[in-house]
Length: 633
Image 1 (spheres, rainbow, N blue to C red):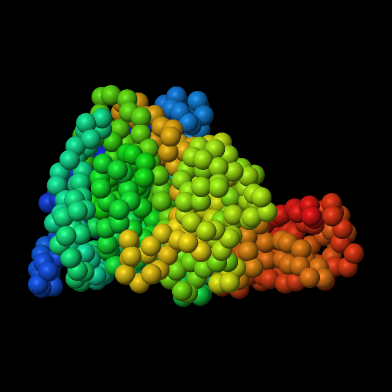
Image 2 (cartoon, rainbow, N blue to C red):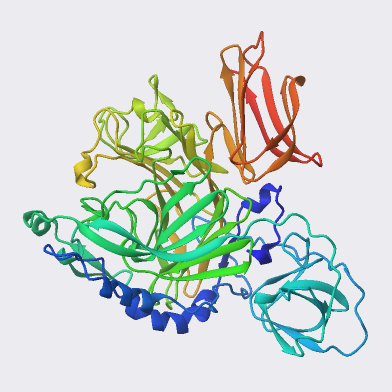
């Protein structure tokens, strides 16, 4: 967000905020909107009639009812943070807040009476040292504050205001001007640094062939959570010989120069696709049809393997809300940052809200869930981010896809191969009995597993070596200790007809607030739990050895030398250095960005086991952007 003032080459930027609070910030801000949204949010999963295409009029009514006014904003100033006592999070939750820089005057404030005042209408708003988003952030102001106007730029798109005797510039869309609009003088501004292109956020619709799932559901209640969900009658559905018909879904799109991210509020607020524009490929699995599978919570009777990234609450195995209509709000704090907040209807039980944020100049996006307990009782629960992945151009996974888990053991959750360890038992990772289970093509039947005993961090992901493309998640294991992988199998997989019509396949990457499906997280009455993590595609570097908030690195022995790959999540002008036992093997100036990463096989004779190979990418100031050490096998 514009108020974040993040450092473009600081790994901490991508990292995470972790907090447990006793506030309901989004609830308070969105309640008036939510009441207006309930009519739209009440729409169930579509039930196309078997003899006709669903009426466009019905869909348009839902869009009108569920789209909030543009002035609504999901950002709130948090109240004091409580100490977390929740398992499995550490006993003291740390709130990571961006320090507000000390204001530096960019012009001398005039002592004459101001002709106009600026009232801040968003929260928070950055102050910059010039009239443009390319200028440095020198401070922040918050909604409701009122400041004298000193000057304006020639186009009237930025206003210079006085804050505690110092001057800074604010974007005009983030303030209301009181007084004489023409009174403030036009300032001669310094030359603006090269501005990043704006992030687009817009609404559209997507037509997807859909089976009449909802016609075969009925209300059921989980008494423990006071949660009414839809139970699927699979026997009646299969007896009906149901067919898929086109159905129109609301879609919200975030787009910058590298990524196009599409969310579907009507299908649980999920991220439906993440297109990496340099390759043109969707890194997420996107089912060609919306079709009920036999999986999900046993009591629910079915689950839609629609694809994308879904939010699973309050139970394991996909939760209950994956197919419900969610509300949403779009938010822009300046031209370079936009976000979408998706949220469950405000019912009197545990609920989730998720911010998805995209910034200019980055091939990465952040996800910030908030789990809210609005009740007067504590609750034990499950929450998982479930990403269904199929990186590359094929729209399905291939045998060279590899799971990236930085651990030496996993815990088996489920398996089709009975020669593998039983459920809840340890499995060496990645190699067991000579089989490398990180490579999907080595699998027979399905397998699900958790990092053991919990997530190690700071990353997980998948990378398809044949497609030379993958997806990475960067996170704090203290904030989200659950890390799970799942695949449908390879030589003897689960039948694709169970969930799709085109025989496509996917793998899953789960991120949870508890280490496994057998553990529970805990939230006291009135508490909200939140954290932030970063996701980004990776392509063109051969694989991934490590990743952090600045990008990914690949370093591995290759024929005659070392294969080196560097993928920064944003442009970098600098220098890369490759060493072996502190002896320089390669050093060269580079200009890299997500569309033009670095990959090279560097000749190196006489390499021996036990030697240390290191690769570092420095920026033009000499600061480390990416680094990795490898002890040669």
